[in-house]
Image (cartoon, rainbow, N blue to C red; front, side, top):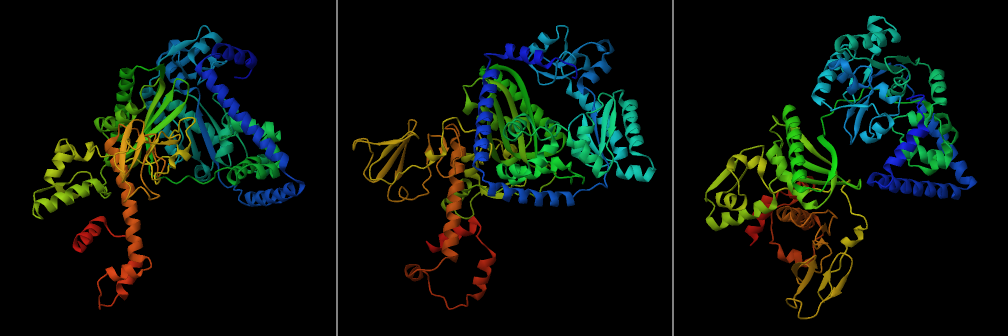
Length: 638
């Protein structure tokens, strides 16, 4: 986009965005960035000469350690396809060649051809703004199946040069070509030229390549001679440090718009070399990991070892659309997402347990909600059971983006993983077994690794669905706390602390409480707590005075862990309560078995003349007992 009048482009974007939800969201983000800048400036102003001297020594030691880790023995090549989506469309439809082309819609552009980029049109730009910049802009709808096909062709070429290549997207990859150059006796330039030629011959598409001693710089190099070019940086320390000395920090992967503003406005840093000059302030104002990263950038250091292949942790899909609050349309889009996610998981023979729903509102506010199922699932129907509950709990809401992510994955063919039986199921089967006798009727659940026995009557009454789908459609999902769960603006986690031990009942709305009249309370021996219209009565003599009393603040937030669970998830709330009960029982059992014995406890225990040395030894090895054994022991004592 060199030669583009950037001021004109920014003016058009400003005029066409002003007053929109996007514009308001950008203003909010800018205000937050300004607050960060002011905070860092205040922190810098507080630094004394002794502080600066101390952090200068810290920075010098870090630089020496990082310099000692420099590895110039590897040759890394980064390849980047040229305007990949647009190039594929032109290859399939030659009549588009030479025209300003945008892949996407009036809502959003995925990529633009080089002819369109001359007008300032770029990826992640709304299509209507692209039309204002380039009136002759031609739009083509994305075809990801086609892009995936051509991506696979390029990866077959990569395999010839590095079987362990690292693909970061459909059109980018890192290759360690050290061995190829040595084994075949070719230069780095020859290897890069040969690879680009092989890709063009195989696909009919062009790509650009960058070669350097590490992956970080190789990615920067691949952008220098775009399109259809290459740049090679020698494996020499002086060449590397000279190259990065004048390199703008924004060129480095991991340094975005906000970080660039912080470094420039607080410390005046614009190039990588200036990071080393301001190293003391970087160590003083930023975290240790951030400071190490900045100093590594200043030295031109990056990853040189091939990343180890790890098992896939998650799989996701999301779609952006025109903002709407039409519930039927939103559920229709959710249905499509569930189908796409299920297809992707089944292709790779994967099942998952933790489903996360991502939402972006019309005001660009991002929310995520997660649920963990009892069993591993990968079918559209099973995914929709939980996804619909998560979405329904958030409505009514106007959305412009929706996504689904499945994590906690395992291979579908692997039956070694076991799923733990929930406390609620255990209690019911345990009680029914006692009522109906030890030899009562039972059925076996043999699906998906959940190998346990339960009373047949319990199974019918408790879970109402076909026996053939026990593994996948069990509604007893268990919710886990996720770090990125959205907390509504203005809600404070301090509300999770509510005193219910007072003698008078109180009505709590999450913001405070007030005492009730005597007539309002159901009885003198109970504590009554009301959350958004739901009245819950607790026995004051058994639990209200305990600090770990489980409550739902605002009828929404768990008072023990702060997890948010909407009112519609009654079964999941019971599971969540069971989880805290299990923790409590295990803690009590641990204290009972390993804690100091009081006189009362000694009096309660029957005397035994058998030696206890072996028992004491085993108690150190086993920290807790299985829940089945715990209740068997309890039943015998009763």
